[in-house]
Image 1 (cartoon, helix red, strand yellow):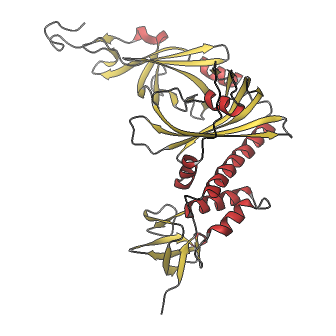
Image 2 (tube, one colour):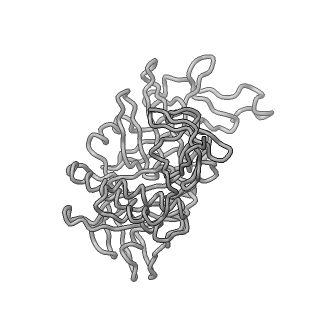
Image 3 (tube, rainbow, N blue to C red):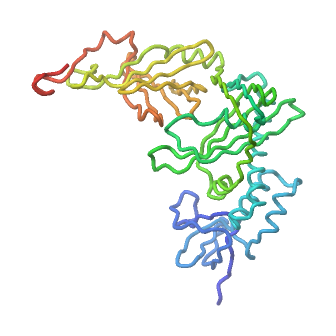
Length: 389
């Protein structure tokens, strides 16, 4: 008896060892691939064979007919359909034909529309919430609003390899605000991490000569191949003209966030465990580990990390956890987490991966407690004839 033939209808479907989303992925199969049904489970999973690979996939991601571009584009353009379904249709269309310009533009537009809708809900439900960050920008010449906004968010960290960025602006009459969505594709410098999609959504007032921008939401995640391809191939749409940019960027934190950070303010020195207990330890070059400085600057919070180099960051948000830990989120997207030791209240654990600085992971004590811990260095002869510094 011949086996039933089906086609992959999801943009990229995982074949798994068993009928579970937690099972190991055997292979990823792109949309339009023809497969044969080996077994059907009552749970809605089918075991299928695609070429030389077999695995389980959800039946809803399979179809009796090979997917074609036109119905997917029609679905994505149908404003009567739910936004999530339209975006999914555009994603599948772009995966089916990555070179189709209309599909790419539609996918980006629907992606931006989803972000607008999320921002719209945020502003409606949390009208009293302060913005995550604030930027004042002055633009000269004939620069457009779009160009001015894009330049305001130009990544200035050497740790990021800037690839592409795209911006869309939406005038919300109900909220009487201009909403914007900006997507930046970034690759961490010197790392093997996958390409990340950094999305900023917010509002702005003013014209292209002087903008007042508030960023209410930022996210960074790994984009799907279809979305990544669509963003990479979209035109830049930049207008000409000279631009003189004077940005002032800082985070505006809530009173609750500032109160949480206030207990962390000051200088933190790194300690290490030796035979005699926790000590401040320096090496043959006089280096004594990492120092963390938390500075309260009015409504702003600054972080300075010192080791062989000095790096400064602005805090864009603060998250309090039930276990008492406090996580500082930088405007650059990185995080630095503080956790108080349960065994010794004088000691805290700071951890975080700051792309431009490196890894922070160790035990620290506040400068107020520094005198309670000994300072030691290398022993005699460990640093050569001259001894330790």
